[in-house]
Length: 107
Image 1 (tube, rainbow, N blue to C red):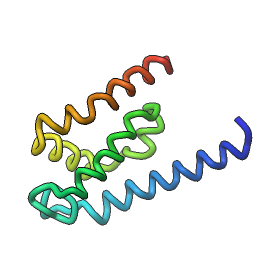
Image 2: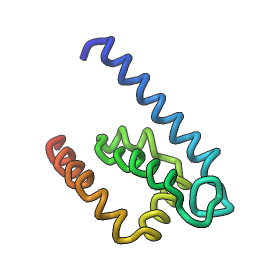
Image 3: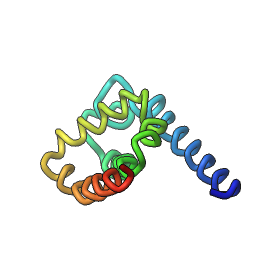
Image 4: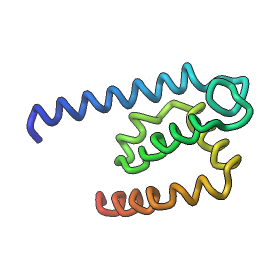
């Protein structure tokens, strides 16, 4: 890979990491299960979760760099999945299918 492409990849990795850190430290609180301590999910929760769920398309090591050590994010996604069941899982089924395909092709 060319140095310029590697630099761009590193820049986006840093942006993703910092975004997930901001989500973990600022927008997810102990007061409630959803953004800003809400007790019920909002449209913001649903839209943001779609972006976060797409990290499953990354290789395991890259996914770990972005989401590792972020227990509030994991708890938030689980709460969304449980609260909106079965719709949340259905909506993300295509992304998960593609992720499985990509994981298999990386082996």
